[in-house]
Image (cartoon, rainbow, N blue to C red):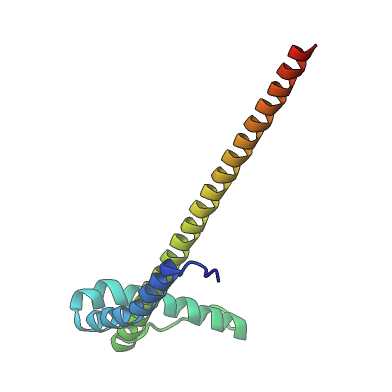
Length: 141
């Protein structure tokens, strides 16, 4: 019975992705506590996200030119921390996909090189057999 290779790389990718969720939660908790993260990392993206989302909703409902009030600091910090955590999980997932793609491409290249080498060797053997047969037929005459 032939068993396929155990996909250890896929198992590792899955483990990394699963570990990214608790790490993202720790990042979110740290972002809520740190004044630096609150002021420079969480608040600006949260306010931008809020403005874009509200403008989009207002335009869909037909309101044009309405002023949008910024989020209060607590809600903005919460939204910014959530955005930061989701961005971290997204980056980990994207990294896993890129690594898997490059691994598959390398496997494909090695199989293609192996096939090319096999074809070249087969052609050389056939050419040698043809030349040998020509040489034998030349001697017989």
